[in-house]
Image 1: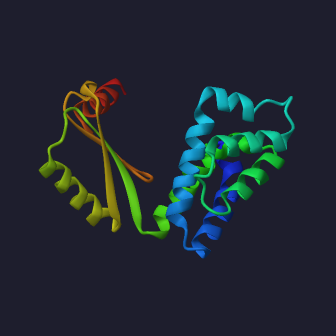
Image 2 (image 1 turned 180 degrees about the horizontal axis):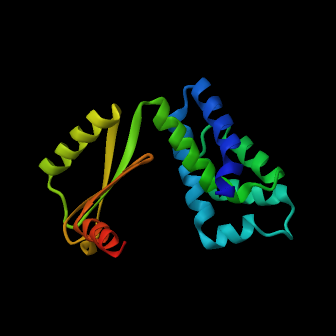
Image 3 (image 1 turned 60 degrees about the horizontal axis):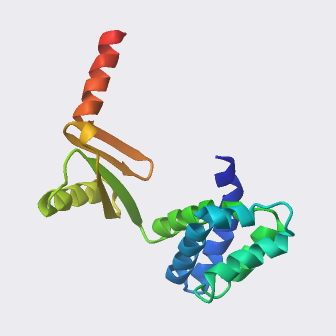
Length: 177
């Protein structure tokens, strides 16, 4: 939670800059790359190493990224490094994507199903969520056989647990109280 609070102002500033430059997609790709690099254990150790000067930590991350960054992203990395906030790059990227999705009236929904959903089921789910959320819905699907049956849907702040496991848990809670 603290990382998210630290990352928000950086993400908002980055988003506003990228929006003004009409470069949201390029910034998204760059931040996704940087977040993936920073998540690597070896890179994470370098950018969090207090023995290295902050500027060198930022330069190291930029070196790993090479020339694959959108214009202006290097300045964000240098600012994060200068302020000792480089380890929050993953949260900055996540918050940037949330702001972009809001601006584009889109939501990414994660669906966890007991079994793989076929195309028709996915389409029905997308249509229902689009009607309910009044946004374009992009669906990511994963399988968790422990659900027994049904699905769990997470879209923004909305969580719908329509799984058999969830229903059994709610029933057990009612019976236990």
